[in-house]
Image (cartoon, rainbow, N blue to C red):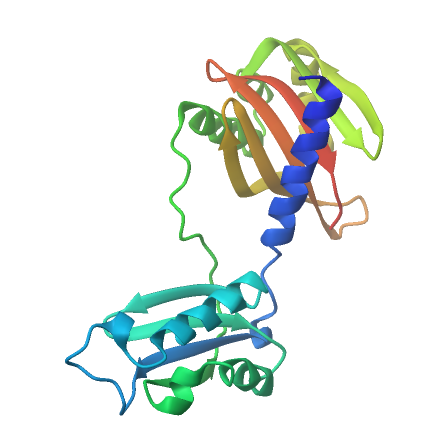
Length: 245
């Protein structure tokens, strides 16, 4: 596969991933909907044969396809979905398309959902390549140029991609180590947070957010997408796609 084709396919995958996983919305746009069994629930029947249960599931699937449903879960006898919508009236309009509620199979309770701490329900990647890449980011955030460069192959290549232009910004471990030393000196509080990490073979796709203090003393941050080729626990190639705040 040519490098141009590889980069094109990778960008398509990354753009699809970025579209599917938008930044967390403001708290006042999230609503929790709790589903409990209603007066028409027949405890003698299995859930999947309850009246309008199939339509209930179909409505939830629709909400997921349309990007309205943030997450769905069950705890105890309660079903919970978190929806991203502008107001409670919009939530009620979406639930009106679920006949199981009007029929009394389920009762839906709507509450504002205001998260104060974010995480992930997915277990972190535990492959050798992912562990090595996380260690690389840890060394970067400690501002240790030598330790960061230790995760780079001797002949590593670092490419920056912007639009239709690709440039070789780093050629070899030593040159990148020297650049890192100057970078850490220039930005003494720079930090990179990995927002998303996925892997296909030896290639790892990273959505990261970099933060630092600007020369004017204000807090700065920028996001980017990167593709790391990791073999034998060393970074061989990097394709870096800078984005914006």
